[in-house]
Length: 256
Image (cartoon, rainbow, N blue to C red; front, side):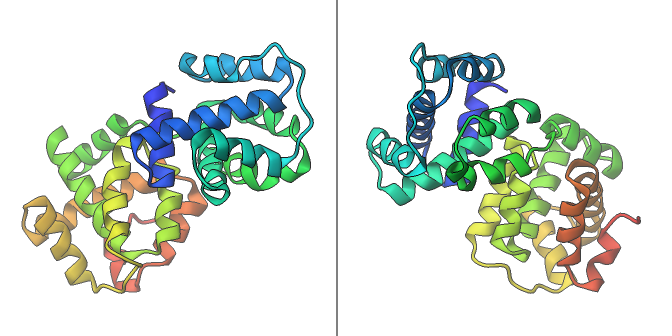
């Protein structure tokens, strides 16, 4: 993973701007370097972007503070309050969970005391192999008979409309399993407010309006997007999303 991708994940997870996301990464990694063993810091650096080295590299023996002191130091370095520091640190650990192997993330978590569980558990459970955006869009293009640009428009329209329909927490789960390039339409959709019931006809109309095509074409394109969702995210995650949609939406979903 490149450094800018790691920053983008933190930015999307926290809703903060680019500068705040970078401060969160720097503050969290610098504080983590004070808590991890030297060997574990070096192991992490082998898998993280090289830009992380100034903050995570250490030659000192680890200190023995707990999570409360960890967050106090993160807050002080990032210039935020303790509650915000907690959200930002969780986002950084989540991004690290996407950047390093599951084995390495587990080794790092084992190097921390038990009270860090709230910061690292979600990232450890949430590790997934994220499908590249180009591969996702190529799959939509092939299924819907579109070129690459058309597949991007169709995908963004469908994801934004889906995010308007399902609960915000479920949208965040999707964000964690889809490539960074597809996060923006999900964030736009969830920004419209909590998930609301929408009839199938209205759901398709919104996709068509956003994409600039007829409802008939929008329906075909939505099927292609849902098919790629099923292939790209964890099976239980897809089943959860599909299970939250009314029965009339089944015509858009790929057959088992």
